[in-house]
Length: 84
Length: 195
Image 1 (cartoon, helix red, strand yellow):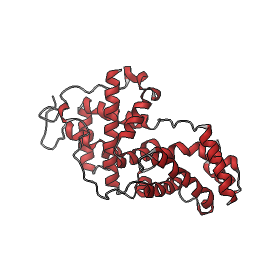
Image 2 (cartoon, helix red, strand yellow):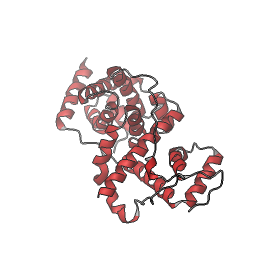
Image 3 (spheres, one colour):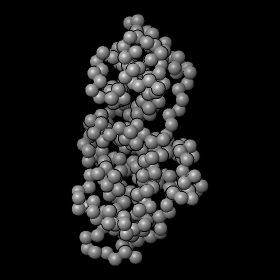
Image 4 (cartoon, chains in turn green, orange):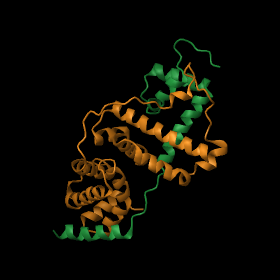
C-alpha cells in the first residue's frame, strides 16, 4: 500500500497523464510527480509499458498488398492523365 | 529502395514505372486515411484516385519543403473532406476514461494488479497475431481519433505535422491521441487475456 501525501497523484489520475507524459507536454512539476508515482507503483509502471507496446504494435500494422487490378487501373489512368 | 524524391524526379520525366512504385508505396496508407473521412470504401478510393491525378498533374507544384508523404496526405485530406459528410466543427466532448473506473478502488488505486505484457507474453506480442484486432479497433475509433492515430502511430508523422494537416491544436491532438491509444490498449488487453 502506498502512503499518500497530499500532493501525490493516485493511479486513476496517473493513467490519464500517460499521453501528455510521453508527448513531453507535462509541466515540470506534474512530470516529477508522475515519475515519482511510476517509481513507487509497479501497476502504473506496467500500464505505461502496455501503452508503449500498443504504440509500437500500431506502428507495425501492415498495409494489405495492392491488388494487380488496382495497379493496372491506376496505370491506365496515369497514361490518360499524361495524355490530357 | 528508391527514395520518394528519386521517384518524384523520375515521375517529372514521365516515368510510368516510378508512378507504379509510388502507388505501391502509398495507395494503402492513403486509403486508410481516406476511410477516416468518408463513409464508404468506394468514396475513399475515388478520393485517393483524385489525389493521384492531382499528383501527376501538379507535380511541378511540389517544392520539396515538406516530405512527399505529408504533401500527398494534404492533397488527400482536402479531397476527402470535400467528399465526406459535413461534420460539426466542435463535436460534443464525451466523458472518457483511459481505464474503466471499475478497475480502481475508492482511493483511486488499482484494485487488481496490472499484468505486464512483456516477459512470458513477449512471444505472444507478435505484430501478426494482434494486427487484425488492432486494425479493426482502429476502424471502430471515432473519425477524429482515427485520423490522429493513423497519422501519428501508423504513419509516424510528428505532432506538428499532424496538427498542421488536420488543422487542430497540439492540446486537441493530445486528447484525441490519448483516447485512441487507450482504446487500442484496452482491445489488446482483452485479446491477450483471451489468448
